[in-house]
Amino acid sequence: FTSNMTTGTAYAEIWSGSAPIIEHCEFTHIVLTIRADLRSTDAEITYNVCRDGYYSLYFAAQDNTIVDPGQISNNDFDGNTNGIFLSGVDTGGEDIPLQNNYWLDGTPTLLGSVTASINFDPVLASPPATAGPTW
Image 1 (cartoon, rainbow, N blue to C red):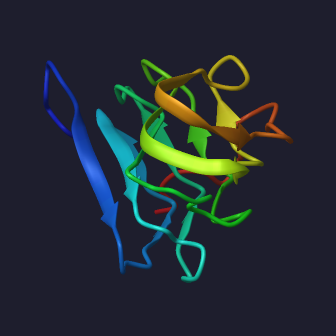
Image 2: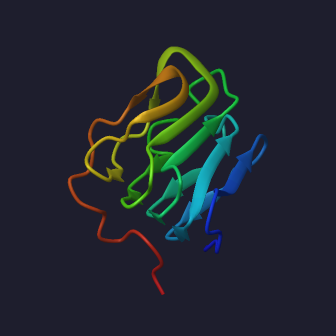
């Protein structure tokens, strides 16, 4: 998935009621945006490569932990402009679990209305060998 935008940001948005399985994809100039509580679904966002997005991930308008451990894991988020943007997210002190992902320069910064905490531990020391397209 590639956007040819030269300014601003293109988004791939996951909305409430969806249970996407996004595996072994490559996103260029696109920000993955989560606008849903995926905890009770079979959603998986795993083994993807995300490059040159304005944010590594964007969480929007949620008041809970949004994902279960492992639902967003083994991804390569190296090469994005900014960290994780949180807009209207309040987890009530619970962590958003984003363990086992590779990030540019370790753990990313949190931007936006940060009323949530993110559990990155453990952070992958290198990109997963099987991340990205497999054809």
